[in-house]
Length: 249
Image 1 (cartoon, rainbow, N blue to C red):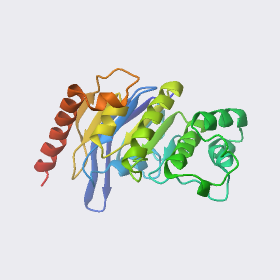
Image 2 (cartoon, helix red, strand yellow):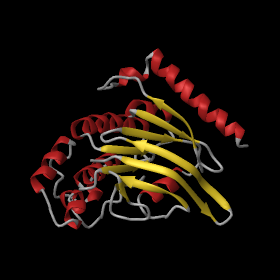
Image 3 (cartoon, rainbow, N blue to C red):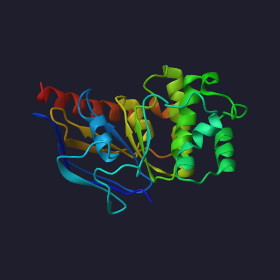
Image 4 (cartoon, one colour):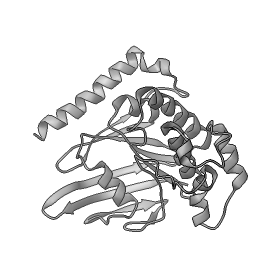
């Protein structure tokens, strides 16, 4: 299970309030994206959820268990792939399971093959392209035993063509395994293509100002991005981000 509940979370750094009274509920198997301007506290919120930072107020619950300030309850995929350069692809994707003392090598090999990495199982990360490294990193997150995966702008460093390919692959992979995902992105199109729901944060300090339930059926294809309905939704989401950004100037 991967039901995440955030209740009244606030976080200060000295005199600067970064998060203000954030309430959020992510149901099991849901794909939720967080959008907001740069500096809006999105990464800080991830660090609080993951237990790297303790909130000044509020609580974090995972499946009704209070995990506030506790580590080891979520799987995290950062902007950079963070693969260990001295470990093979197979050894890297098994790391989360290895730390828990239980490895399913056959499942890892199957997922590596489905990700288009067949033949690279025993290669070091330097042999992989940027997109291939991100696929390996996501497989590691999927194989880890934690029920909730946090993705922090995992495709931001990729070129546009590779990014589009990765978005399609991520959607297809998520649909197969149905893990609960909380996804940070600055890209509205990416959020609309991938998400069940989009959460918009304000800035200075961050609070939830708007949520959108994305209406598009799955599986979604590249044709959707060019549709009038998709462009209307992109415009509507963008207007909300710009409006709240203007309010905080």
